Image 1 (cartoon, rainbow, N blue to C red):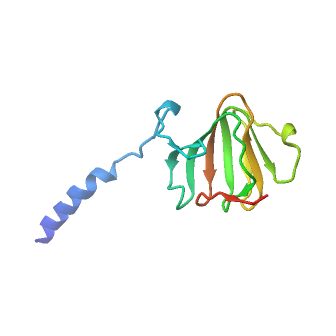
Image 2 (image 1 turned 90 degrees about the horizontal axis):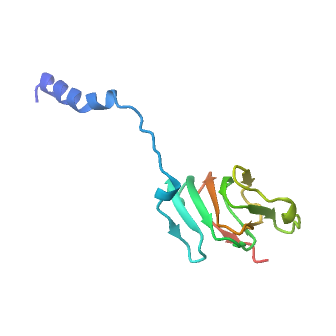
Length: 141
């Protein structure tokens, strides 16, 4: 291929991307694709592959859900969208003093044994970011 032909070919391939604008992603809560665990907890992926890397997801827990005490290998950051939850360190009995509702923020550090509960009469929905792959390791207590 002649140098001028190669230059024209490359310019044709690259030009559309030079002026391309980053896309905005807009997804309503009702348009999410939910995967439900056997325990009834729903995950709707937003970004990242949750079993492989850091990820963002919407998480939906049925009303009354109480997790067993467990740890996670990654830090967990969340913002409540619907319902009321508690996240309490294992062995701490102050759950009644720590409910968090819509608009509230929480962080559960990696390696901290805790219990998460949806304490409202309606399902709990939260935006969740973990800075590493998802895991759920029961503490056996």
